[in-house]
Length: 474
Image: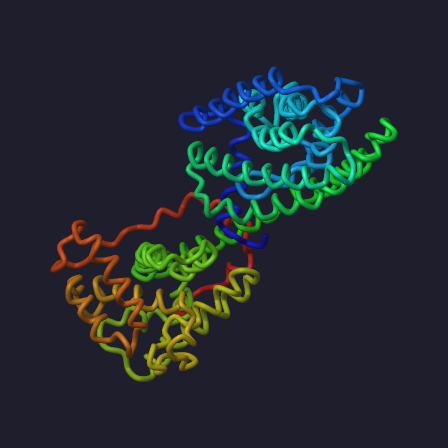
């Protein structure tokens, strides 16, 4: 999965939800789905013909195996995929189709009873509401009922294919509706995880069909799935551990970024405050451009750290009240390279951020520094930060001049579009600033907004001990 901030957020939120009671829309949605499913399952159980099948020891074994399979949880986004298809397919062939949804619900609840008894891992209310997750079984059961509940064999393959298609389509639509109404999770964020869920179910369906064939010939063969479930449980636990490490690493990266931001602010209050104000504008521009979650996260980090290299520039130059000499300007221009070096020392994700920090003073016409990149050779995040950085710098006081008004700053951006700045980015910055025109007088200096990022800084203490010697020369 990599470091996808959107998926990381969904996984963290899901883990946090499991141990607490439901509230508001989530409670209404989950219990509504559970009660509606109970009514649908009861209707099928009462009205559907048995197809000549009866409850047997195999039926009980399938429910217990389903309970075991439901505990093998591969986390994906706000939900998870479980290898229950291995048991669900034999259920369609071995049980009366009208009872399959009820059997699935019983298996889901039974699978979480240990958590309920031990009072850990999942809130009791969520165990009860789990029956709503059995909705996916209704459509395939209906397909089997409509097809006359065929016996397992070659002639049943088309029916099984139709049932699985109905299962996947119904599961996607119902999950999207449930997650949207309960948690506000957008359908777009569910599309990626569902590809994996569909792939897992599709790949396990033939194995489940083989298990159904073996069980129809020799009922004890149903237990042959147990070793595979044990193996999958091991893999699931390993994945859970890796995801936990990934989330911890992500927090460490963010903590290191905020630590560095604090370091800049402690070393030079203007530079630190300026960087935090640039973050707000950069994120607004990213949202207007529709950048993906990873690019948005990287843009946030670059906006906060684009001036980190200035801690290596002497205070006498940074705080000089008058114009800089050519020699002093040359020294200032090294701050992008110094910033990249500092971030590469941290390594990992911040080394990638360092490459973007290096490019934040390139110009659209190729006359920037340090590499003379031009046009779209400049990374889009660097182009965004460059434009937002310039706007904020113009509208805030400097040691050698008072702040300019928002209107004057926007006019300056327009005049330099196509030379210093990407014209398309200038248009978006102007649109963002104009849309917020009611928040301030366009003829007055812009108000600095402090970015609310201190909530994760506790992680920074242990994130990067090698930062202790990053001091500015006297």
